[in-house]
Structure formats: structure tokens, C-alpha cells
Amino acid sequence: MGKKTKGFSRHALASGLSAKEFQLILFPTEQCNFRCVYCYEDFEKGKMPEWLVNSIKIFIANKIQNLDKLTLSWFGGEPLLAEDVVFEIAEYANELANKYGCKLTGDLTTNGSLLTLKTLKRLVALKQDFFQISIDGDKESHDQTRVTRSGHGSFDKVWTRLVDAAGTNLDFNILLRIHVTDVNQDSVLNFCKRYDESLASDPRFKLYFKAIENLGGNNVDKIGKLIGKRSAREFADMLTRKYEQKSVDLQKNGHYICYASKPNSLAIRSDGLLNKCTVALKDDVNAVGKINPDGTLEINNQRFSTWLKGFTTLDSWQMGCPLSYMNNNSSVGDIQFKKVG
Ligand code: SF4
Image (cartoon, rainbow, N blue to C red; front, side, top):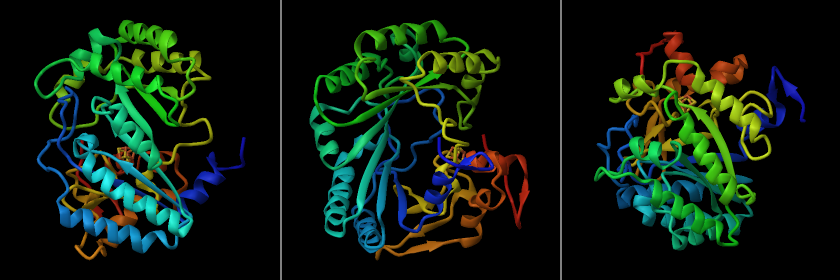
């Protein structure tokens, strides 16, 4: 286990502050082919227009020359609904990374339904090879909450994608984020059984048990029915221990540091606005600037720096989720923050 400062891994602190590393979080589209009952997104924004794709490419070209490591993190909506944008930017970044000797990594937060073998193969070749896919238990429970836009359950499609991926020898990692609520625990156990039988022996598939929390948005009432008691968290903790070798514990190597706390992480929305956090999409304090067509950034430094304060206080809450920290400490600096969620 590495050295720590105030419970944070020194390596993680140095990496978050390094000018040689950069995480670019991209929303290639904010549309989604799912309508999960607890989703906090409003689907008002569409796909990145061509001018924005070009400006992001210019931004990467300028930035990568001074980097040792560039990470592209694809978010949405469902990023694979705009896979042409993902490929165009990732191919460009990959070319430049090879040219300048920069390490390129990439991850996608995806519902998994569009992760065909063809798409998976192409993404892996571009080092966009880490996938986080949410699962709400086995079919009976997953199909109630992770519903397609046309109102159908999505479990069978997603499971087929996982089994197909397991049948290849491609070099990827898939993290199955298992949402645990008070009402789906039997179904989660059924899913674990299915995982044990089909995927557990494959080191590319890992589990992350997450007790579901209220993320705000228009579905607070529905989610309110799903949370409330403590048992979901206890159940998630129990499964994390049971699957110790196969599951991810964000706190294992010291306190978790959210990317929104880091000076070297930035999100570009599908309309060119810049954010720090990927949850508070409508919050003013998260609107930290915009990217111009020539690839330059206009940043509101006061707002931007508000997200980074955890690096000066080394407060585990402020670092782990600056959004919730701000919302519970309503006046920070000169800006008054409204509550979200
Ligand atoms: S600031 Fe909090 S809500 Fe926003 S991305 Fe980080 S952990 Fe999530």
C-alpha cells in the first residue's frame, strides 16, 4: 500500500495536480436510448455539432504536446448513440498520442446496449477500453428500472453484449456497476449467481456494488421509494466483501478523489459548455466556461477554482464529492450556491 497524506494516496494527489496529465470528459450526445426511472438528465441537448468536434480536436492537438497522459472519458446521454463522434475524436487523439509519445487511455460510461462486437473491437484498438455499465439486478428487477425509450426492458440485450464480449480475446475491462436498492436485493443475488456462472472466471469483468442514492432530477419521487432504509448500503458492503477479489472499492487506496476536484479534469458538454461535475448539469456553479471554435477555452476562474478547494483543505468530503460539500455549506467564497438534488 502506497504512502498517504491525510488518508489520501500521495500518488493520487500528485496525479490530480499534475500538469502532465489531463482528463477530458466528453458528452458526444446528451440523448439516450434508455429512460431509466431515476435518471437526472433532461435530454434537452443533442449530438455534438461538427464545429464543436473540430474545436475539441484543435484543443487536443494544442494540449497533447505537453502531456504524458491523456484520458478521454465518454459520457452522455448514451455516448454510443453518437459513436461517429467518439471515433472521430478518439482516432485523432490516438494519432497525436503516437506522434508525441503521450499515453492515451479512455473509458465509457454506457448502458451497454449498443456495445456490439464491431464497436468494441474498434474502441479497444483506440485504447478506449474501459467500460462502466450499470445493472439493476437480474432481469426481473433491471427491466423495471432500466427501461428503453420505447418502454421495454433492456436486460436481455445488455447481457447478450456482455457474453459476446467475454467470448472474444480483446483487451478490455468492464466494470458492472450493480445498483442495490431496498427492493431489488433478491434480484441482485440472482444476478451474482448468473455472474458466477458466466463471467466471474474472466478477469476483465469486475463488480462495483453501489447503494443507490438520490441524484436529483425529475424522478426524485420514484427514487425516494427505492431508497430510505439503510439496508441497501449494508447489503452493498456485504457483497463488496464477498466479492473482494472481483469487486472495486473506491476507498481501498485512500480516500476517493472525484475528477471534479482536480485541476486537470474538464468536461465538455454536447453544446460546447464546460462543466466540472457530470451530475449537476443544470447548476450555475458547474457552468465554468465554454470552448470556442478555434479550440481555445473561456473559463470563469472563480467558479472553476471553487471546485478545486479540496486540494487545499484535504477534506475527504470536499475531495470526494465537491458538489455535495458545496450544497451543504451554502456559502463558499463569494458565490452563493443553490441546492441541487
Ligand atoms: S462532484 Fe459529486 S456529484 Fe459531481 S461528479 Fe463528483 S462525486 Fe459526482
